[in-house]
Image (cartoon, rainbow, N blue to C red; front, side):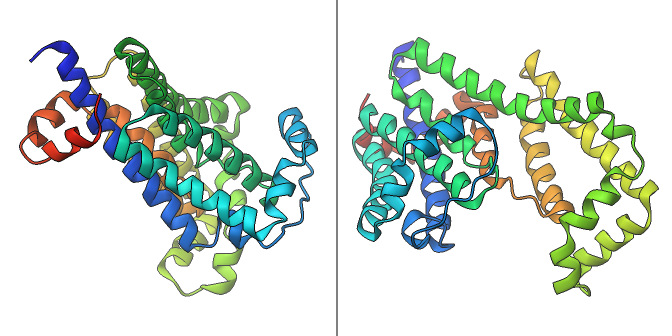
Amino acid sequence: MTNSEKFNERYRLKAFFAFAIILLILSYRLLSYSLFYSTSQPVYSFEENELWYRFFLSTHLSQFITDSIWLSASFDSLLILFPVLFLLTGKRIFAIVFSMFLLFYFLTYNLITGHHYHGLVGAIIISIPFWTKNETRFNLLWEAARYYLLYIFASAALWKILRGSAFYTDQLSNILKSQQLDLLLQQPDSFQAHVVQYLIANPEASHWVLLANVFVQLSFLVGFFTKKFDAALFVISIVFCAANYFVMSIVSAELLILNLTLLNWDKIVVGQRPTTAWLYRKLKA
């Protein structure tokens, strides 16, 4: 098998997993009433001063679409349809247009909620390599997505260290008092609430949890120098996101789509070749 044929196999399999997970993310958002059709003509009350968000808001494109039930429904339908069309045809135009649609949805969602939600960044980033079928460009973009994942974790640790919050004993305890207020009021007898109550009442214990958090995030720096530990980072990121949700109720599972860049696709291609030949016929190079 030539190098070109090997690349085509890896490309098709990566496309299948990336866009299948994207469809799962969009399906969850559809079922959780988070797409445009369910926003019911939202009021835009975004008060941050970021230049890009202000410019985007001033175009009134988001308001134009979300103020119309039919336009909202059409946008949602296309947002879900483009990944399906890409999987069925392999035409990169559908990947490009989808990325644009998802970016538009991402920015508008943050404007509607008045909150900087970052989870969908992973889906946007992972879709960009599929804008091209050139081996060199695709591999470069795929590697860039991997480095972005490493940056997300490592920069979060460095931010805590450089700001000094990692060395403030009461930092996590104080955060939990506001972050988990709903949990403590609505489910005070749950196991999760008891753990949060303990961490709030024991700042030294919560500080050790914070330091463990920083250490885990900082460990992703190793990925900038070698890929030997990518399998371990794959597992660590999943455990971290699960623990982060349990302690802080921070949802970051959507970012885990970038974990696809940590996998050894040469081994995966060899393992799946007898069972997914149909995929190769669908996604022609």
